[in-house]
Length: 199
Image (cartoon, rainbow, N blue to C red; front, side, top):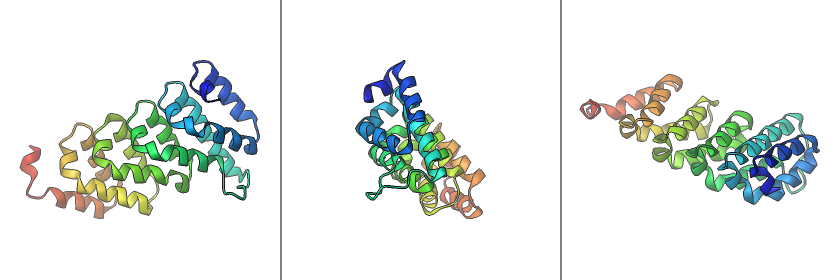
C-alpha cells in the first residue's frame, strides 16, 4: 500500500479503501504503511493520502471507534508516532506542511502535541520559512495549553531576530494579534533599546 499512496492514480484508490474499511482495519492498514508515512507526506500525491488518514483518524476519535486495543494502538497513535521524528522537516516542506496543518486542525491535542514540541525546538528555522510560518500561525490559533505557551515563549525569545526576517516577522505579528497581553508585553520588552536595528 505504500506505493499506492504516492502513485498519481493509486492514491485515489488508497483513499477510497481507507474510507470503506472498518476502524479496526484502518489501524492495521496505517500500521502497515507506518514506516512510509513521512516520505508519503513529502510527496505530491502521498500528502493527500496522509491527509485522508488524518481526517479518518479524527472521525474515528469523534465516534469513539475503535476502542483502543489493549496495547493502546489507534490509527492516530501510529500516525503521530511515525511522523513525530520528522515533524520540523514536514513543517517546512511544500507538501508536508499540509499534513501538519491538517493534524493541527483535525486531531486532538494529545495527537498534535508533537507538532508544538518540534516547532518550539526549531522555531528559528521553521518561522523563517514560508510554509513553516503558516504552520506556526495554525499552532497559535489553537486553544491555550502548556505546549502552545512554550511555543510562544520560544517565539518571544527570538522575536528580535524574527522581526528582521521576511517570514519570521509575520510570526511575531501573529503573536501580537492573537496572544495574551502578557505575551505582547514580553515581545515589546524584548526589543526595548534595540528598535534602531529594525529601522
